[in-house]
Length: 158
Image (cartoon, rainbow, N blue to C red; front, side, top):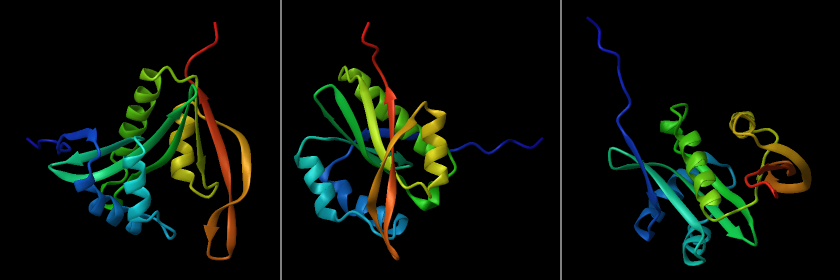
């Protein structure tokens, strides 16, 4: 009898300063124009919701959420290239949505590259829809790339 392979359990927890070196390493391996170590440090210092996903005590992904004035903004969500296509991005997004709802947020926003089909598919699956575009938002090798601005209502005004 063949026993199906199962993924080891993963855990989501608050990001710490001790995570920043690995977060920065994942960011560099994931993007051509990564955030710097200092940007992640500043997010922690600013009190943003910074979370890490670990699998077998190894950092596999992270996400950052800013909450203010009844709104939330997903600033970053990334899974280590070695751990992609295992549902970890969806787990991180679900946790961000939970944190936003827990803060009584009415609407959540994010920017995404229109060329990032995987991320767009995940966000659409979770009920996000495009509300605008930001011209020349992202750095690119041939100049700048626009961003799709996505939103999702979390609390109705009843």
